[in-house]
Amino acid sequence: MSTTTTGHEIYAAQAIKGLTRQLAPLKAFSIDFSADAARKGESVNVSLISADEVAEFNSSSNNFKRSAQEVAQVSLTFGKPIITGFAITPDQFNNFNPGWWSGKADLNTLEICDSVLSTVAALATAGNYGDTAKDKMTVSLAGFDKKTVAAIRGKAIQDKKLRIPLSVLALNPVYFSELLGSLDANVYGGREAIQGGVIPGLFGFRMVVEIPQLGIPGFVASPDAIAVAARSYQPVSNKPYDTVQIITEPETGLTLTHIEYCSGDDGELSDSVNALVKSGVGNSAALMRLTEVK
Image (cartoon, rainbow, N blue to C red; front, side):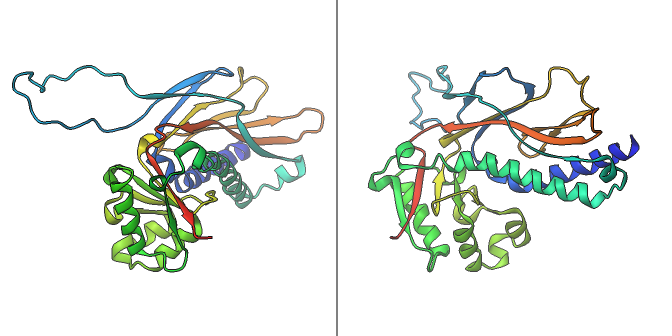
């Protein structure tokens, strides 16, 4: 049992480390994550984060007193959880190697994160966010630098009316890397950008993030453009399982469930991690796509 416990501790610690790095882009959107279990097919209303309109002060109507308003929400219905895992034989278990558990945690966490971010990246389409001249900007990889980012910023403000201090510039790895190559460390934050995939505050953007799953060069979006919800998914009873462990990523609150099950007939130990996540379009006017020169 002590060997199993040691493996769990390594797995959980390594999983959280990997989650924080991979899921950084999710902080840019409207998220509703909870460790509470969800029933199959349950819908969750994600509140969209957006700014209120500005007007002159009116002493007659006293607009210090504000009218109650409907909170903008998008309803997301969960489907089936995503899951990945492996099994080990008694011989493999008795020859326990901490590095093996650690490596498995790294790889399986990456797979889960890839699946989560793939659903988010897939939303950035013309069908979801428009295909007129104001809804997109054409860019080229050659010479994609801070001047290009400045031009993207200007179009996002002028054409889409996006509030840049609240908005994210999301780029695929090729464009993100090209941008990094044009910046020096005192501009992009050096290690944080290279290892964390996030450039904070560049040209007033809330953040510039790398999303490897993007099939387009990137997009600019306000927090209300995309809604993401997650709930814990775990067995009704812990009795058949050796371990049911909730792993929570501290930056976003996304929860994964780590489960171990030992089958009595062959003595194999099955180890898996799952997540119940759903994403959807929020404010369809709050995202501007970057398209590539053909």
